[in-house]
Image 1 (cartoon, rainbow, N blue to C red):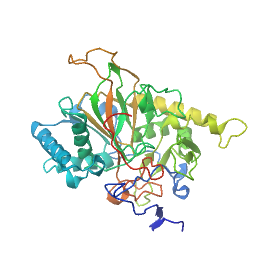
Image 2 (cartoon, rainbow, N blue to C red; image 1 turned 30 degrees about the horizontal axis):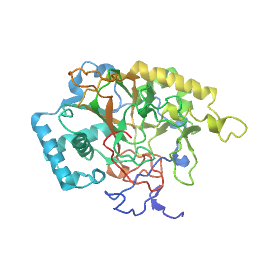
Image 3 (cartoon, rainbow, N blue to C red; image 1 turned 180 degrees about the vertical axis):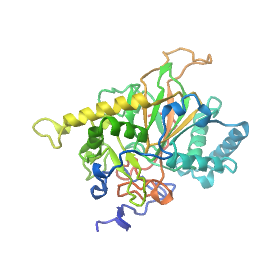
Length: 408
């Protein structure tokens, strides 16, 4: 067995002790990895139709905000505010925040019910009414991450170890998809999943226009594609898609991963197996430096794959639910069975006033990537780290976790 590998039933994991001085909560993000190829099941084993609570249609929710939105009450805001103040006073770094040091005695039941719905139900929810315009960024971040501890474990979102991410236009060139992460631009984002079990977005400030969310049930998309384009589903099930790491890899790792887009959950005891998905189109169309020219090391996208991406995007857009986030709103999504996208946006010009008459600031969302490991009720994924506490995410060597309060 390779050094550092620990055997678990049917899987191997890269568990090893970490320095708590570097990783304050005692756990290190596992990182991006290709699947265990022996666990990737062929298209012939996939169901023709998916059913169950993870399947939903946009029309069920479009006029029924109360089914997927909760506005924090004054008592709930007071509880979150008090827990945040107490944590800040403790002097513990944000990277060390846990349920044990962010107590929410009244909200904890709601958060546990939400966790179950995110993992095994519709997979999306929106909170409203966090008073972010009254709080500084430290308190906003503390409150947000404190709530996140009730849903999962923070994983690093980039090669710099950011466990608190920031979706903000930093003026980077969105056409440089081989180097630039689109969340650092104002460009449109195609339907995709992030590299974690759950993703959260807290809106601090809105843009002048655009930047709105669209979400869609992975399982509804799957069913529609099975009916209209089974050839596309078969293409998406094949483990011959290459995903760009964009330079965010550890020593000894290839700068890409060979993966599928659709997987069956690694649980053959289920009578109705669930389909799991991992895809960011920008990470499969950005590999020209490796798949073209005399030194090509991997194959370029085939015509079948290009067609599959086109049909996939059109189908997601057709079936999607539109969601607008205002300051103080939090969106939580499950990446296992919900795709999400974002419209392009335009920030306020310098010196402008926002809708409230205050000096306008650039659009700013705080982002969390959260792990829900198999050992704690998460999906049984076909990856070697499925049992890891902080599975997924992006980890480069031993880069420590950090929580910048703004984009950098």
